[in-house]
Length: 172
Picture 1: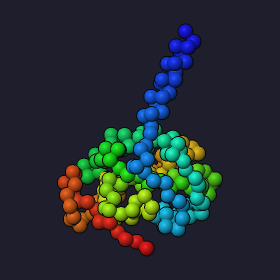
Picture 2: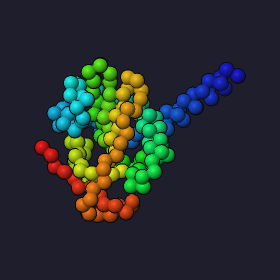
Picture 3: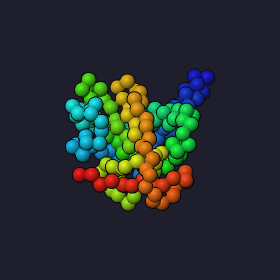
Picture 4: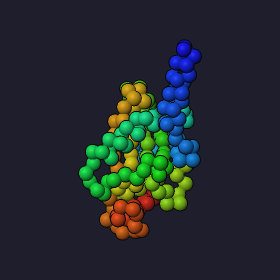
């Protein structure tokens, strides 16, 4: 009886753990440096870089999934309907804030516009639901921000929402 119980617990753990796995080709972990610092709001000016492993990425997936589901349930703005979560490429930047808490800034992109998204932060003007920014505090295990970019007024190529894809900005 004890063996059956342990087997059931093991199977449940494997199902839950397997559910929160992010495929490596769909994300990259970038360093916290001057370029990434310029992308983040002023609240992380005094932060320092931190490490993040693939297991750390997987460990946050449940939090990201919950925030994604809450956004899709709560928003009534038809221009901010998100793409399916598995259609986004993700850029992760890990840091330690002024309080010593471990945080991660995540940029999710539905499009990479032929740019080297695995090695540089893509700066996008507007973009609507194609660009999602998430802040996760790994110390408190909470998503502290989940927002989409604004919607561009410049027409480029159509996307499934009937709006246009964003203009990719080149910032130095």
